[in-house]
Amino acid sequence: MNKKKTIWDDLNELPRNEVAEKETWQKIEKNLSKPKYFINVLTGFVTIAIVFLIFALLTTTNKNEMAIQQASEQSLESVFFLNDSVFDQFDVKPSSWYTFVQKNTDEQQLKEFHSLLTANKKVDTPKPSIEYLNGAYVDIILKYKNGELKRYKVLLTKPGPGYIYDLDTKDWFYNDHPNFEDSVYKLTREEYTSWLPIFIIFNLIFTTLVEKFLKRKYKVEKIKFGGENTVAKYTIYGNIFLIGFFLLLMIFRQFVIHIFWILLFFSILLTINIMIESKYGKNKAGIYMLISSTIGLLLFILFFSLNI
Amino acid sequence: MDQLYREHNRTIFKYIFYLVQNESVAEDLLQDTFLKAYKNYNQFRNDASELTWLRKIARNVVYDYFRRKKLIEFIPFLKSHEQTVKSDAIEFILENEERKELFDALSKLKVNHREVLILRKIEQLSIEETAQILGWNTEKVKNTQRQAINALRKIWKGVEDDE
Image (tube, rainbow over all chains, first blue to last red; front, side, top):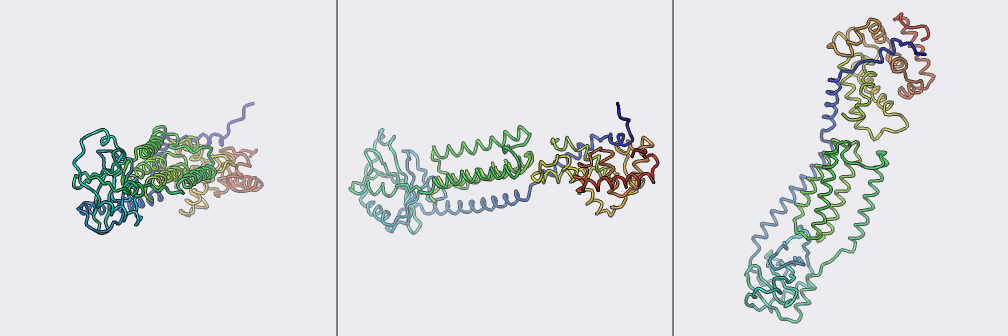
């Protein structure tokens, strides 16, 4: 039996103005897309970091240009080196801000190497041969206590070690001292920090815990980026893929890059991702997950590639 | 439009509109309601439906508005709708004499009487759902509804006997 329609039922059928409905939604959307406080704080930190790094970069570069002169008869402060170099490359920089550049400050080893350099005998430029062209080199920058720098390539494979190329004078030398080979190996031995694997495990555990915490807090089974918007979702995942690709490329190709560029690259991608996620994401879980995982990856790159 | 807004904006608008009885104010308060909802979505617990949770937020937003405007006791209907540009909701009310009388009568009720009638009679929610939204126990809902009907009957003769 049909229930009689009452005046109350009639009021329940209140129409909704569709234009007003859309306008109100647009206002809500606009308000929600305004940058959040923490994004401003993050942007502030990134800006300060970038300004600091630009300053550091400029200062280092100027000093380097001025210091590349003939080394005087004085003691060495440190040696910067880069292994696995090739004939026509010289990527080592006199700064620990560059990835994969190693630094040795062991006074004993520096003293020994410096004294052995006096046994260098100038030789004619070797004729292009497979040994020189395909040989493995270690690139070295000697930094003296007065800031002067001297740049060498040392051939490690046959007919070296003993063959040295001075990049500043463009001269080839040969060092036949019996201790030279041993001294070069000691000086350019890479020190792997024993806690790197611990850091990687800690990083993985931390990221997993953050993810579990966020899932519980925001009551979601899976943290999805970009909400319902397909373009937003693929842009975020594309950026994550870019970061991963960059990470692998850096490790396998041993790119020597100033930390400033890495921070800039990560900051730009993270900022883009946060902006997209804060606009299209369903909750803040995605934003926090993006921040924690990007910082985790960044720290991994820094610990893996920097001489710290 | 987001799913939450798309699914519930009409119901929440109706609830707010009958409470404040002004369409443009209702639109503003609807906006505030959804902004609060999106910003605090992490606080939504599944022990109530999304709609119940939204109605609770809307109620707080409306009460804040009443406090600001010092209109907690009642809003004169004619004054409020006369100031409003004619729009869908107001036109709907004005196009039928009985609707207009009831709408006018509702405006003369206390806010707690008005809201219990909106939820129980217009939106036809159960006593339990109404109690959950208003934060009352079920007895208070029943008593307030009875008082509201009696108060309404005094100012509008159209209330049927079974109410």
